[in-house]
Image 1: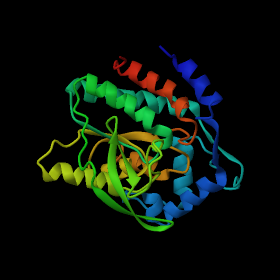
Image 2: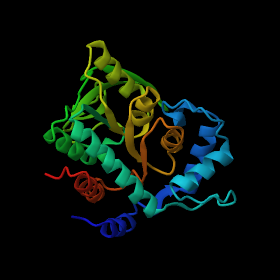
Image 3: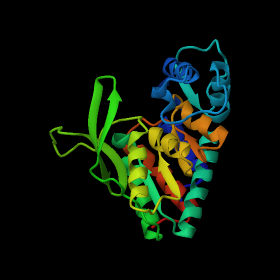
Image 4: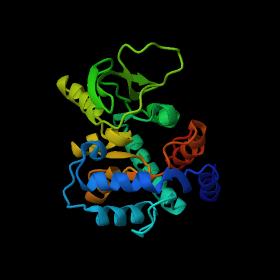
Length: 271
């Protein structure tokens, strides 16, 4: 079993925490857009509070460990690994609780190239524990506005994890899905589940729009978030997100394996 100290060392070595790849400039741009209520950064959240730029920066310093100094405007961002470990413990506790109830769950990602393996391992463990891993709206089309204009995607599931693929895109057999921050896929999935009378998930596990879109609709949500993802941390502060784990979401996919082992061990879900 990986100890907290061992995981802390891995977080720093893999740059999942500590000095991370996300730049301060990119994070500050996201904070400004969030304060301006830009839907590209709200990703499905409708904040209750005012959340101006100073408030967003202060919250991200508290939740992630980024600098609270408004004069620090360039360089790499920092995530406090102790905050990551604390959040992973809370994340594992929510997994354990839903597994004990054998309750239905929904998993989805807008970062399939990086995080699919992380979620798939959780889906496997929860299924083995007796939870129904839901796959509503499989194959349904979703129109998402991107920087390239309106694009049509299809909702797909890989090992129980929802993602979207661009409709009509040629396959090379290697694609895991498209990168998106949109809340529309999770809204589509949840609406489809409701249309047929359920079951509805008692826990949604995901990132970006999958987390915020479901949390805004009142579902319990847990998931990872980078320093340029203020919406999940605002949602956590306001109660629409149960657990937001501060972690770099853009490193190599195999670097997340120790996190998977850690949370499954803590949740008593190791296979």
